[in-house]
Length: 100
Image (cartoon, rainbow, N blue to C red; front, top):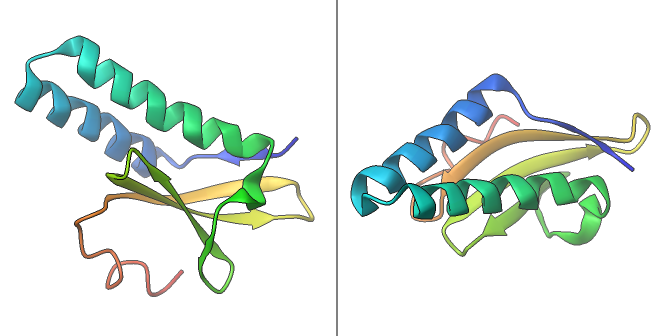
């Protein structure tokens, strides 16, 4: 089983998604459901981190609800999955992640 590493800035982005969903839906249930779904998908990488496609080089992408993309790398030697970013699918993430 792999260890999942989620930096603080990624957790803040996920929380911001939850807050945004609450502001537009006025539903804590909806915002919690999406937050929980994002986290469950990320944590599922513990078991099968290679099951998602390679975006470029060794950077992989996990898509959640067809709306959010989670970018991560696998370190086989350390048995770790490093989460780098989460983006809304409509966002121009190519210009942001070019340095990874």
